[in-house]
View 1: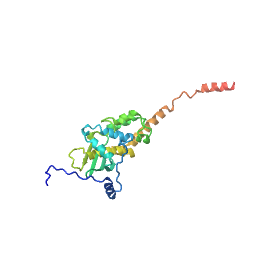
View 2: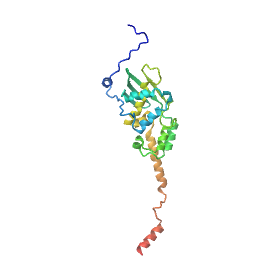
View 3: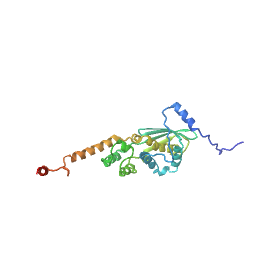
View 4: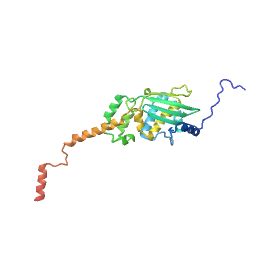
Length: 236
């Protein structure tokens, strides 16, 4: 019996655990993206990354499928390095995704370092997103903050989907945000940001203020004349 050229036979869904086992045999260092509950990311950096993704109106119709894929555990491996992300995403087959991200523009970085002043206490506070709300707004400002614009992203996938951003790419992009929950400093590596410089500037600013105030007399210090007067009163 002929079904005609328009007949489409759905491909059998691959078993996730079986595919993970195969991948681990080839590379024991694979890192699947694991999420819990409805939220893909729980930390400030992860949530800010995913919120930034959802600004990309050109990809709005693809992002929901990506969220479904990452929540379903379909991102079987995701590796982050300087300016580059690779991922293996489970669909009707195993698909390989590559994402490249341009370094943060120097002008953005200089303005952010200047604006931060001494508002960040240390690396731990920075990684945990513990800084004034005004800095959060600065970091996420569209086009001038730390997070990439669509023009700063390039991606590819070996799936047959004709769309520039397929659901496998979208899943990998959301997976990046989830991975920041494990290690927020990966964000700085991905965008080629020298966070040590930011902290150094913060410490330098604090030291300058301390040195500036070192020679100033405060209200808690009494003059020699006042001290002599107190001494006389105590001995009368």
